[in-house]
Image (cartoon, rainbow, N blue to C red; front, side, top):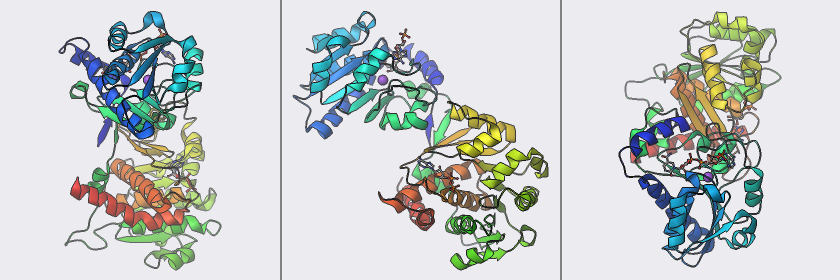
Length: 484
Ligand SMILES: NC(=O)C1=CN([C@@H]2O[C@H](COP(=O)(O)OP(=O)(O)OC[C@H]3O[C@@H](n4cnc5c(N)ncnc54)[C@H](OP(=O)(O)O)[C@@H]3O)[C@@H](O)[C@H]2O)[C@@H](O)CC1
Ligand SMILES: Nc1ncnc2c1ncn2[C@@H]1O[C@H](COP(=O)(O)OP(=O)(O)O)[C@@H](O)[C@H]1O
Ligand SMILES: [K+]
């Protein structure tokens, strides 16, 4: 697992560390990391390092200081460096002196045109963790004139450091070098996209950090958590997943959710609903009945996709919530819970529930998300005493105790109709096997995204192709467990 820490936690850790090392040490370590990545990007985009040109956009604080020191290190490797000062009176003095000593040029924002046009790479040292709001007009004008790839120092300027929200002009980086650990800006919403490829440079601060505020799963974590049957297992011990999804109008939702549960490795899928024929036709291994009351015993239910929001859907949801086994409630089940909160009374308080809304369903259930997605999902998890998984390019999964797991999509190919049904089937499969519901949601989101990426291979796909690719995705994460 990789942690993500808020700026507040990073600053506190930085203060503790600063008391133990000589002044300027952390900045030089940070800048050395920036210079290394700058050299790598110059090689990639301009075919070499020596003789290439770099422009530094330098703001008023330590972020600008990092950029200036990085410029000084790049000078030693023969790079032509020009610093563009956005706020000359408040420029980091030691960093500026270091760059000048190393032979760097310095210009003010008004005369930056030539340096920006000639640059093979631009380093964004405008603003870092103290950033508030979008780029101010002077900085925005300079950034708009950039055509070369941008390397962001610590974070892309103009993005909110703690929410990743972009609310106006902001830097779009090819890569970001950050220090000690990832911060929310690197993994949430638009911030994740604006950060480009994120490189974490150790500067010592990482040793001072408390428990992370959010976590990201690695392939090896997912591989280790995904159940593997042992010699003692049989289909029942592996867990039986009930799927209450689909209808005569939407049989596809039933086929996709059931198929994903099969491919996710559950011992048996029991389908209950009016799309039984369609499910049997595509997945003969599924035991299908017409109603949840005839379904037989299951260890977890997936409920909602395509069941409709009328009386029949309402009754199905009520039955499933009162069954005393973990439930993944998706799609129409969420709309039903939003419309009729009394449905919650059917749930035994100890029954784990995983809610998997997309943004529209989330708004219906818990109100507008607002710019701070993590805070909104945390509030909803606490309010509904459920795991809440908010879908999107960044999937945010909160536990009622405040823990948050984040999954960053590899691509947007999974944004296709029926894709959510696949996710709910995978979650059901893990819940039936007894995997902790918060981890189950995180692992399913990871495998769902990976299956989408493997199926797509750079071309559009439908949700059925994602179901087909689940075994490949599971082989990939299991291989990472063995090798990692
Ligand atoms: N954490 C660590 O361990 C280490 C951290 N280090 C580095 O320190 C950085 C944090 O530095 P920092 O606190 O000096 O402030 P920083 O982010 O440079 O902002 C400067 C000023 O910009 C302004 N400003 C605000 N918003 C703006 C906007 N939208 N558009 C334009 N300007 C805006 C605002 O000034 P204002 O004009 O509002 O008074 C603000 O005070 C951190 O990101 C990392 O790079 C490393 O050196 C070592 C280890
Ligand atoms: N921009 C995106 N990038 C990556 N994945 C996305 C993006 N938008 C949506 N997704 C994923 O696609 C799936 C869509 O789910 P949902 O909206 O419920 O679809 P449906 O109801 O049609 O099945 C979710 O798993 C979501 O995380
Ligand atoms: K920056």
